Amino acid sequence: MAKRPLGLGKAHEKKNKKKKTSNGEDSKHSSKEQTPQNDGQLMIKLNSDMNELAQLWVNYVKKKIANETQEEGDQNELVLNGIIHECDRILRKSHNLKENKDSVKDDEESIIVDGQLYAIYGLALAELAYFQSQGEDDDEEEEKEFDEEEEKKKNSEHAAKISEFFTEALDRIETGFDKFPKDRITLNWAKIQILANRIPLQYISSMTLTSNKKKYPDIEKLVDELFSSYQDNMKLASNLSSKNAGDEYNDYGVFFDYQQYLVLDTIDDLLDMIENFGMNDDLNEIDSDNEDEIETSNIELTKKHPLFVVRDCIPSYEDNLIEKCENFLEHLQALDKSKFKIDIENSCQNSEYKHNSLVIFYLQINKKLGELYLRKADGSGKAYTDIVYGDDQDSEPSVPKKELQKLQKEAIANYKKAIEHIKKIEDPEDPQTWVNIAEAEISLGNIYDLDSKDQETLYQKAEKRLKKANKATNGKYDHILKNLLDG
Image (cartoon, rainbow, N blue to C red; front, side, top):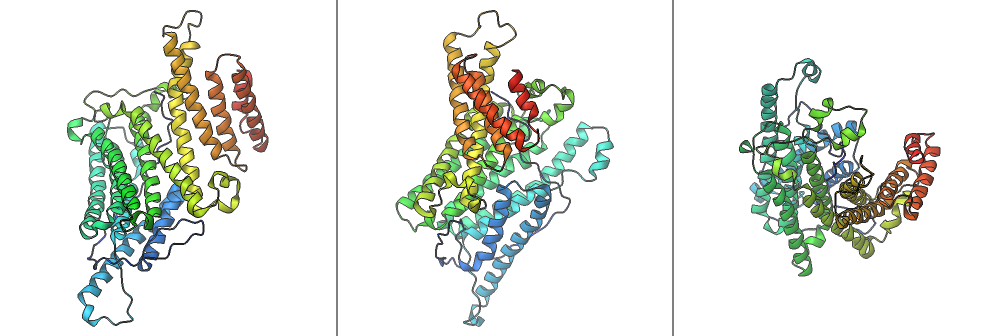
């Protein structure tokens, strides 16, 4: 299995402040809804009393999906606290109106609460866990000599802080389930997202290379439950929609789209964290000028380590993730054809739709599928090239011919799928997207037989793209082009 590139996982923002929140009671559930809008821009469907809260959450999610800068990420802590305070305000007002219903004036503003309020409340609390400090006075910490026991203690304290946020977040979700069982699909998405965030932030972040599985929950079981819960909720949503059971999926479908994507993205990030666990600690032991050493280096874990078993399951998890991403992509295409009609397959070329939510989903999911297929291809591809072009090229390969052909076939198929998705996100104004395609074409060409027509055709295509990108960036990609031409 190929190493997943370092840096795919999202960095955990570090902050020193911790915000505490309060909770209130809600009124009886009401089904007042907005009239759906079909302007090509996805919106979360909430009743009018919760529009402000809904849009606060939408804006936060859009920035998260767009991979905001560190400065924007810091600003988002304020946004999250604003969302939480708005949830508190709505619940308090709902409670007060309920308690004083006899004295409420006819023209006084009413508050309508439903399961989505609790979903957003829980999600916002869980997101705040990202902003918990992993260590104060970082400059001073860098000057201290590393102490493993002190590091364990610090990690344990950090995990305890994080745990408080996830406990509160899940408490809001369970309250939502109790009060609004009809909104179970909405609340399920939120719960899955919270649990997906909890594994890396509360558990893995507190681990060291010497951690013992006895002190942690079964990580493999938790990851398996994420996938099964995702699948169960999709079936539930599909059944409700097909039976027209209150049109819950149709009414709140866009909220599901946001949460589906975030769950898939978080699971991908989780797999990255599991596979690359310990790499940051070990990079100082590796020659930074030797790319092959960095790429092939692997941190060995003992059988007692909490991630020992789950790490071996990464390939099957990635296959599962690919399947779910492909299904989500099909859903977006169907949604576009039936409702929005903005031709998302060609929208990347149209700046008019650059900030359209449906387009953002489409581009991001294609990018993710491209990365996933590349990693699958790199696994069998590296195994194939190591055998065929290894140090002992004069001798016959030790692997049976059929097995060798199987590796080659798998690598070619996955590289082709990767290129298919990467081309979907090619941007005429972004040379890096041209280079991404060229590099994938080079990788595919490397798998074909030496000097074959297929290989030469791919190299020529890659060379053309690289020269175009190099010209547009004043030689930024000279090194890649030189490697291709010298090869």
